[in-house]
Image (spheres, rainbow, N blue to C red):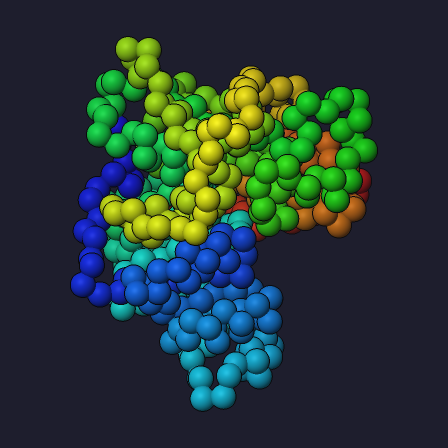
Length: 401
């Protein structure tokens, strides 16, 4: 088994571990700070990066007092300064250059990459180039540039620890096993709010309905991806990059209870499963403390009160985004870049009421079908293709293609 994340990370108990959080105001970032709040002797927050939620970023900053903060736009800097407590004057960085600088700070040991979408790519790459331990929640970095990240990890001694609950579960269950013993891995999917909905009513789905995930508390973008099952498609690509697994060894099963987060089936027929309550504090705590375990304030899973566990094959007719992701990774290294960019534009447009729910998959499929493979061997080439794709999809939506 070829792991990005499969090397030892020395646990340091003699001092607090220095940490930067990219995306501290999102669902992953706020969950991480909950874990850290209960483990303040173990961690020191060196930097926090938000985007536009300045009120929350200021609240976090006033509590944890990091030396560095980062925001999306220059006009937000003064607004943030006005909300900071008297006598507290951190350095405030701006935009992608600021996020990247924060990710590569010499002092920091851990970087939690929790920004949403392709915006997280350059800061994640900077952390990898600087040899950091990267706690990766930004799956798009691996979807866009898994081949680059693998090479940079090897060249710079960086370590990727997967924060996504499914990949963290695989990381734990694969440990100690040889690749030749693994028959396949199974990524579970909640199915979102519509896994058993009548397909004929899919186009009538509203953003409010799609955002109402039955099990997980997540941001808007990932909630819509869960509803379309694009999230599972991106996670399949992520698993392919993280663990070096061929596609035929990665399967997806719908598991509505979200108790089993992933499974590994071995060649002798046995299966190991990772179970836990559906709360992102669990995989975050595992990555923060790795290779040791740290306590959370979460109540453990009570098996006597757990409902029956059920598993189903995904309905790719109703949820074609999963097959689109498989098609993309099989087609060329540039196809996942196109798929991710198209999907981000479509999700935003759906949330704004400009397209219907089923149009997300339809436009994603069009983007893949019309794309001619091209070289994506540098961050610049990836981002250029990402930009062109976004413009194209935007034009299609405007023209009601």
